Length: 120
Image: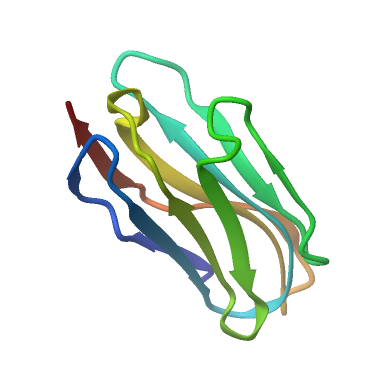
């Protein structure tokens, strides 16, 4: 069973920093693209950042210049370094990964989410 487990969410003051981690485990053959999404209370889930297995990245405009996504392929882990946090960054952050398993299946998996709260 493939699992994605996020960690690193916390309560932080505006202007602060956090680093989120998401570790994949299970019968993994390869991981293609990995994403971070977020969902604020009462709002739809939105894409924050993407990293491909070649290291190339994309960011939503609202985090460009503040957040950095990167991955450690040797540990099947993706990170989100969040700097200059704003109260509007408050949300549950989810990782999503496209994974090929040893059973020959390839699909997207979600983590359980980690809460980030930014106080003003």
